[in-house]
Every structure is written in structure tokens, then in C-alpha cells.
Amino acid sequence: MEETSKSKRTTIYLDAETHRALKLKAIVAEKSISYLINEAVRHTLAEDAEDLDAFEERAKEPVLDFEEVVRDLRQRGRI
Image 1 (cartoon, one colour):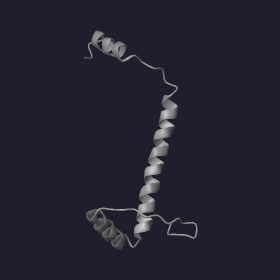
Image 2 (cartoon, one colour):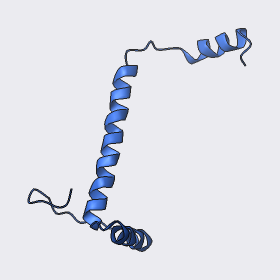
Image 3 (cartoon, one colour):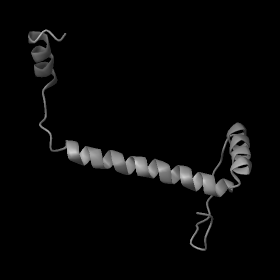
Image 4 (cartoon, one colour):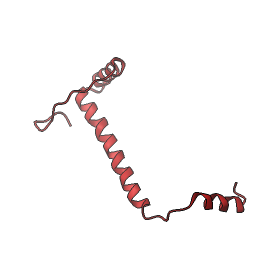
């Protein structure tokens, strides 16, 4: 998705090496730097959303006491 009229302008600061690598990647991919940054941010946000979903699912799991788990593992010869 290239820039649209709904795009918001922002300023970011990249170190010189990162900027150079991003600029080269944009050239090779025939995409704009803005496009690549937007895609990277979307990817990161999607991962965050997946993590939040996993946390919600795991919230229903019983809470286990660490010491009890270790004792159980020891009793069963696992550690």
C-alpha cells in the first residue's frame, strides 16, 4: 500500500547505516522507504496483536506454584 491522502506525516531518526540499508532495500524492492517502514510497523503491530490474543487465552489457565511444579518434577524423576 503506497502513501494515500489518509497518510500522516512523521519524523523519525535512523542511524546512518540503517538508513543506507533501508534506502538500498527500497531501490531493490522498487518501493518507497515510507512503504517499507509502514510494512515493518504493521508487521510488528500484528505480532503484538497475536501476543495479546495468546495472553487472553492463557489467562484462563490455572496458576501454578513454581515450587510445587519443581517438587513434582523432582518426584517424577524429571529433574
